[in-house]
Image (cartoon, chains in turn green, red):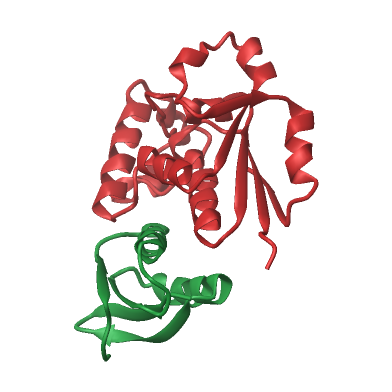
Length: 76
Length: 159
């Protein structure tokens, strides 16, 4: 996991809150900037893939860190 | 890319059935769907400022109950006074502990995301409901208004 400009901690939140919070955070960011999201909801893995495909905000990478799910999304 | 449209009819007014319309509407809006929810009959309870929704174990054999009660607890006893209040309180605690949003929160997020909320005028008249009890930002209209939007929708759900 490399660089990012903003970070969203969605730990402990369940569907659909991680997606909704991510959408809101991205809305306040400039195009090209990268948002790092940390989540604990296992459903968020597929959800962020789907979110990325449908909104055009690219999912740069995703993985697990210390039992949490981590995503980097670049604002379109 | 033209914006996709999501049309939902919400017909139920219990705590459990209140979730799907607002989860799908808020998520749809986050994915770029222009979204409307048409509330009719018991679904109108979801528009009240003061949401006092309940969940009932009565006549609901699919509802998981604490301590494996759904396995041995006689169905008839789910009709006992106090059961509904108990199950509602347990459900709310469970949801909070699992990080599931409250209905109020999901409703606010939906409105923030410009989901349009439409109340069925006929139901309001039928049950003599006071629109002062409803949240702000609700539009009152009939079935034709629903079709105006639903007819052009990409996803249309009856909940």
